[in-house]
Length: 514
Image (cartoon, rainbow, N blue to C red; front, side, top):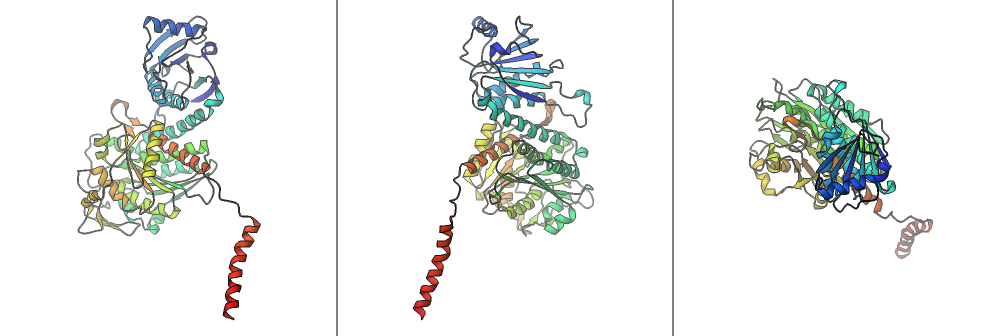
């Protein structure tokens, strides 16, 4: 879909030719002398319209209004959250097949983040999965014009919103693909395609490369599948070469049967979504390609299937991870942590400023937080706060969970350095404690997105989360780096003094010794 930003008020919006004019009206609305303002004022006075977020009043072929249909929509306090809620509530009107061109107009001041929230809500509501569906069912809405009082004030938020849409929809499309259309090799091809953008590079490692790296835990998971594993390394180089990167690690289990510890058949089709962590890394890089921020980012994706066959890893098997630590695999359905742990060890070679892994890791996190917030675990308070703030700003929220050392007791094993599971109690936490054993002192966070990466039921499909959270976090880090004072320039005189001082000391020592 194409988005345009345009200077519009209610008077000028009335002359916009479109299939639907969506007027976003905040509490405290002040009517002007134009026709639309008078209609809104009368509707409010008569009680036919209230301004609680999502309340609507449809109008048809209004005199002196070029739009065929007009929808007056209350947006409450006009915050980004309220606007998103209101646009989603009105989505039935612009998802209709006859709506090809949509104009949204703010009937009041525009709050920070409002424009970004509006365009993202329109895209979210009108998204249609297309990879394996007939093209005739593609999204009907082709253009959306966003009218604001002042373009200059809204431009950055608009551009960020459009870039986020590109990233989120990229993640959604790959998350929604059936497993036979999203094999590890196809996932690697998607990453390679991103390398066509400026500042992005991609390397893909095969089974022999991974064996040379010593990724025994990752290889163990892939053993039962005929599809060869792929280890994907993406780099976005937007910052100075000496700036440490942020490393994102995305779980890429393209289908999870549970292995020998096989899952129940009910809803097993949804295990195609077990690569949504990987999809979120791809989506984040797609957004970085649009935004080109001044930051360095590395994306790592261990991609494979978890299948049961004669070569599959068995409960009780012990494998050696890339870190050299041994792992007793007590449950082959706890495979995500096995592919992630070797990737976390690999991440250390970049000497990162921070590492964030993203994974549909545990059903326990779904029980704890449902589908509203992703689980956040971190060994660094600053990193945790930055991610939580980014999630709030992106309306892609997370919630920090504990990482007390006592939770790791259940991972003890009689036959290896650790087991890969610790029982049902606190399962999301013990999974995070397992991963923590592979990060050392590096600032690290783990996002468990098992409850937020996709929806089931009638609305089954990928959400594209947490691309919004990750992109907001990276943009925030880029802003922090930009605000840091540059190191003082080294003048010629200073250089001479640095050389001369030791030389003078050596001469003095020589004089004393003689």
